[in-house]
Image (cartoon, each protein chain N blue to C red):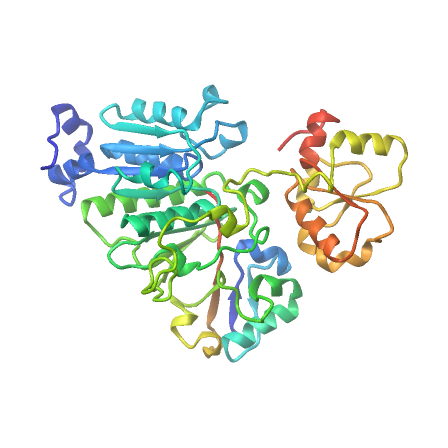
Length: 384
Length: 90
């Protein structure tokens, strides 16, 4: 039995009710539906806002993070007045302001293999709005193991992807990407950046697909991957096939329960930069400052991209972008003390690994990158 | 010459180019030509055994080359190959 709509709801949703493909029955289906949004960041913001506005009866929000100043360039569900607040609470308040008719459940938790089944249990559809590979594989496997649709979206700089996985015998995320890329090969948005509008485009597509699934209308992106290039302003879809050898949804699955996804991907399940290569390899900003002050001979290598120098730079540093690092090793001498740095210490760790495997020993990573230097040594520099 | 579209995450390893025009009769030759021009692409496309990495998906038009003849898929002059990257941002 579908729930009835009140007069207020009929008024609120009148533009839906006017569409014959939705109508009163469709709107009642939306009211009866429950959707879990994993991540309340760039993608989760438009996803949750549009699902709430559309009248999805029950929305769950999972996130463990707090609202940061650098989120506001794209995470439009949050506002400056909520800086430092839990993202799920900031998002819930915004959703209930938009539509108090709906139920919003919040899970201020790190979504992982231990809690995923329990959190997802009440929901019909899972929206993947995560920002890292481990959680994407977790969401996918969870959906396959529980038979729930996985509405996928992913972004980087100007590129977006969207698809609907695990519906009607269609492929899953692992059919397309059986394995994650090795750690460090694919930069996160925290390292490489993202156009603030991009998650708006991809997130609204995800929300559209969820509504179509619930309403049972149109052609969802099942067995198709949408590719969006914001620079060319081009949309392209390619065909995805179910992989009979898929480790989770194939004929003889090896993955029959949730695994340790951080171990599987070799990276932590968030896109925040740790900035530490371990005590043996790290040098703090203060230590570096006192070494430089005492006149100690060392080469300071900046592995960021050239355009980042305009934001902040360290005097005396030489630029060797990480992408060129392996081919420019001859410019470095293993007898010299070398300190590597980037924005926050992620790319410099990759550079450190390249040098270590080339036999360099007198190498250090500036822990926390130039941002740590700005924070604790030179406050005249901006943090980005 | 067939074209190879380079996804954003791989552009730093392909001289910043978004599309490469490369000689080759089939997918393997075009990818080889790309790696020859831009050696840093190699580790991003191939694993140590010289196989395409499992997360590197190459499409010709709408079709994954795995649904065609894989690396042996023959290419016409004006074909465009697309590498679909694994990206995780959200």
